[in-house]
Length: 74
Image (cartoon, rainbow, N blue to C red; front, side, top):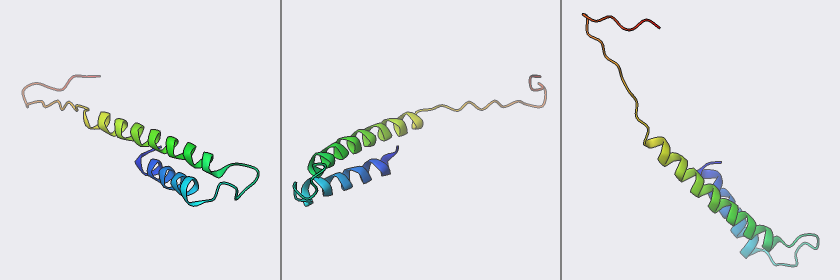
């Protein structure tokens, strides 16, 4: 899950939590489902940001050889 899916979960959860009356559907309380989706969206957003931050701190090593020394044989 990335940043976009976290934002999507937050938006859909906010719609369910705040825009729909609690007694719309008798089987499940949609407000509670909305709050759970908001919490899951915030968690997905935080994990996506942490994952992207770790990805930017990677180091890439480039080996350069001049003509006098041959590259190592693997």
